[in-house]
Structure formats: structure tokens, C-alpha cells
Length: 107
Image 1 (spheres, rainbow, N blue to C red):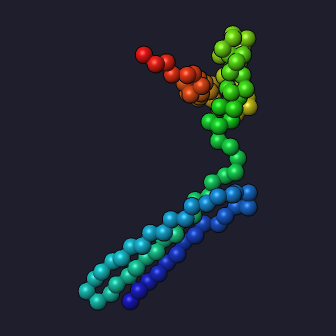
Image 2 (image 1 turned 180 degrees about the vertical axis):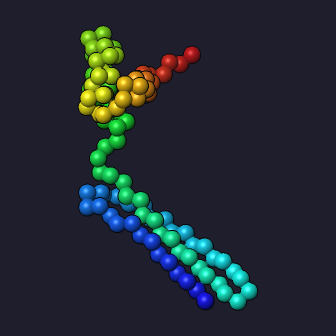
């Protein structure tokens, strides 16, 4: 005896790419066998991530930050209002973005 079960999530209309994972489980007994197939669809949103939005702000203002025209607290405030981060998260994102934009020095 074979039992097949498929589960698929509904796709929202505003999503653009997806990844489908299929997993098959077999259970063997004396006289009865069952196979269960689970299909899971993961849909990625078409809006940019918070990290990419924060990086865009940093790239736009990088020259001003380096020259001292814009301060760290101003960028963190923009992260809070425009990206939707908490103050601690905005501070972390600032550090991560700065690390990516700062050229590495060779010893």
C-alpha cells in the first residue's frame, strides 16, 4: 500500500522568484509500505533587503562621511527612519557597511 501526500503553499502575487524542495519519506513494515512526499515552496520577495537598502544609503554618503561632512549619528538616524531598523540594529548595520566600504590595507 502506497500513500502519497503533497503539500504546497500558496504563492502571493507580488513575489518574483521561488525555490521548491521535495522530500520523500519511506516507511517499511511487514506488509504495508507508505511513502510520503512533502513539497515546500519558498518564495522570495521582490523588495530589497534591509542590508541592501542600508548599503545604498552608505554608498551615497560615503564621500561625505569620509570628509566629515556627515556624522555617524546622522546615518544611523537615516537607517532608523528609512530602512526601519532599531537603534542597536542601525549601529550594527553602520559598522558592517563601513567595513565593506573601507579598502583593506596591505601590510
